[in-house]
Amino acid sequence: MAFCWSQASLEWYRRASQQTGFHVSLARLISPLIKAGEQVLDLGCGLALLELELLRQWPDLHPGSSPPQIIAVDRDQAALAGLQALAEEYGVARQISVHCQEAETWSQAADTVILSFFGGGRDGQADKLPYIESARRLYLRLYNLSQGSHFSPRPTQTRHQHRQADRCRDDLARQGLHGRLQYLELEFGQPLADLPEACRFIAWQQPGLSRQDCESFARQNLRPNPFDRQHDPLYLPHLKQVAILEVQL
Image 1 (cartoon, rainbow, N blue to C red):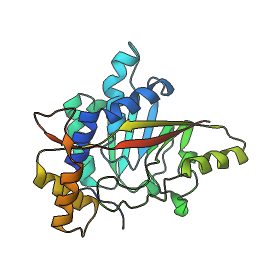
Image 2: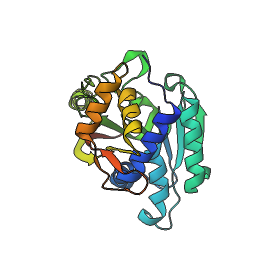
Image 3: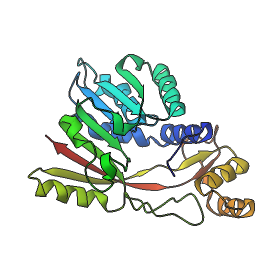
Image 4: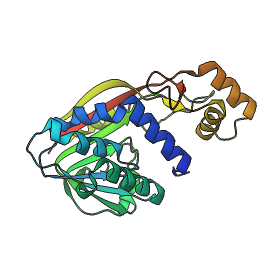
């Protein structure tokens, strides 16, 4: 079943990103690779939090240079509405164009293409290098190497991401292209207001889980929030394993 955002999941994701600084750290890592004023295409962008942070930090990281122009493409209207609201809040809306469209139908090339934890591709190329032909200069792909969700009692495997980064780098080598892989671990747990919200979050992570199992898992794993205890006293920790594949074209 295709992934769909909800208002609740969008809010959880936004709070997790803002409090843990997950996308702030990622943006600082990729910022040196992005050129001033170039077009950056994010296919399957969701909230495009990586690009929003890239734009927000650009004046400090690249003083006096023009920020990139972001093309954000996603089929989910709720996610795009959330993206536009955050872009206005961050003061970067003029640098982002938003398109409600299936990634598979997008045909416009860009200087840099970014796929953030996105597993699909044209013609079902789940284990290949989707959309690399859309990049004129740079292709960046971010992989989630964590094996399944850590926010539910019975983690489900993320088969389409785990160990896929190495296979993609090997595919590039056979094509005569050099792909550089960088591995890192970043905290990306979930801030939560109270136990009932924690149970709703866990049930969203694993549909069909009983209320009793959700509450038992929450009580065993919730910790005091190390980031913003005033607004969200509780926290489900998760150290996310990430790989970044960089391909200069």
